[in-house]
Image 1 (cartoon, rainbow, N blue to C red):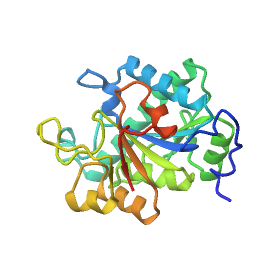
Image 2 (image 1 turned 90 degrees about the horizontal axis):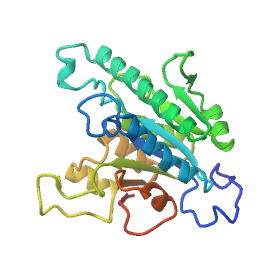
Image 3 (image 1 turned 90 degrees about the vertical axis):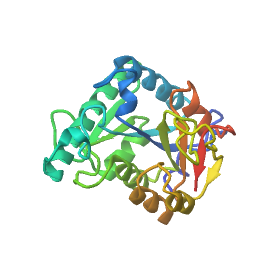
Length: 250
């Protein structure tokens, strides 16, 4: 029996399409309209959205990026050794995770941060069974520090953690309405897809998640929903199966 099927069925969650989800949110999303760092108002808004989903019985895990502070492949890394730059990026994700944890606990949602690198003063070490137990105890779990390895993005970390906790879906939060045939910011003729296959994403080199993350999801038949995080209530719409929200990759 899968962990998802083991979640007790109640009248409150009987209409849910997904009962255990992993939300992938970029560090850039936490910047808001700023050029750098964290907008605490955005963090508070994300926390309120997650609380609404949590309250209907969905088990929620989050992988947060660090691009608002530092990215290993960014120009700011200069000619720094790639491994060193990636580790700095992992530390940035820990900072974002602690900010999001604080925002969630301010709205009375019990939260745990689990890190792939050992920082006991700030986060628990990632242990798969402990993470699942936290979810079963109705805690939101935030995964920080990516996979703990350089050369892997937080997209790959999201796919890996989602499979490890047996999530029903990865929810990829973006600033557009889903997956387009081209960049909708620069191409007014870009087509929004309601559904698209993993293979089409890879063949067309669409910027959904990086290729290794898409391949991992494809190999394990893990669906991805790409949706607009800036539209209030969208996370709840996705988990309740409302049609017309985002793009399903599967």
